[in-house]
Image 1 (tube, rainbow, N blue to C red):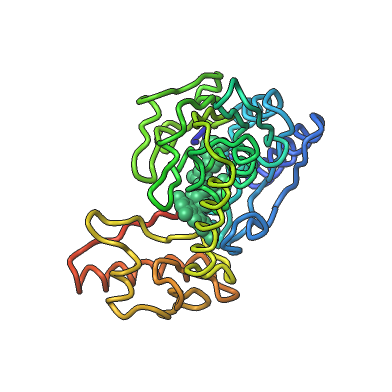
Image 2 (image 1 turned 90 degrees about the horizontal axis):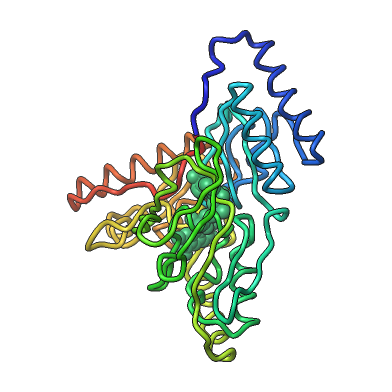
Length: 316
Ligand SMILES: Cc1cc2nc3c(=O)[nH]c(=O)nc-3n(C[C@H](O)[C@H](O)[C@H](O)COP(=O)(O)OP(=O)(O)OC[C@H]3O[C@@H](n4cnc5c(N)ncnc54)[C@H](O)[C@@H]3O)c2cc1C
């Protein structure tokens, strides 16, 4: 979400601007801190500090904060649960806006539509669906993201994806106007949505589900969660599958067949349990992870002629 560059200001002026944006956010009753370690906020548990870290407490205040960032010429980026993110070791030169529990409301519309705010925890949304005996979101049970992050990424698993249920998102666009996208305009495809390209902040989601059998929904969720626990290295920090699935292949299988299980750069390693995951064994830097990804990609390309594209995003 690029805005005016602050590079042409002196270091002291830039510092003052981060102070100002934090003071402004606090004056609205929002949490705001300077130089916040981002390893506290991303599931990979690595990377440097954000110059400012703000948790808006309402959509109205989110808009005010975005406007103030723009007025001060500060770059900003929005995050949800940070479960698909890397932050560079030198930190993030901008304002991180975290949509968390203050954006966690959800409700049932009619019989089978769930509306939720972008910061709602996806697991809680799945449990809400279960509570109302609504089927369609079982695939998402266990994805550790926010609803907004899941819409942005078109998150998916076990044959399902957000595309199957998501039919509208509300947002604040890059010109800071409230708006919405629905249907085909969401451009949902494999781990991609229109939001990957348009710089808007997703504020809410509408999902069409179907009436189902509560016991069957619960059984499916439990089964899929069990499969995750059995197959994924959940004991280590990671961002889930590191690479996208190349057409006609599985990234994890290619990596395993290339003999790369356990390959390491610094504290980053290809998981022994699931080769599709790069994990932080402790003390990994962002540079370690990126170097390992590069080397995995090169080896797989050399051996099988297939390129691997990173699924995990860098906060920029
Ligand atoms: C153990 C583990 C298992 C995982 N399993 C899966 C899986 O099965 N399937 C799958 O698809 N993913 C999986 N993931 C990855 C991740 O959970 C998903 O991509 C999730 O949808 C990311 O949501 P988030 O809120 O954490 O997004 P973040 O990591 O916070 O952000 C991801 C991207 O979305 C953008 N973004 C976030 N919120 C907004 C918003 N409100 N408006 C605009 N942009 C926004 C961010 O700027 C960033 O570019 C897994 C991760 C882990 C750690």
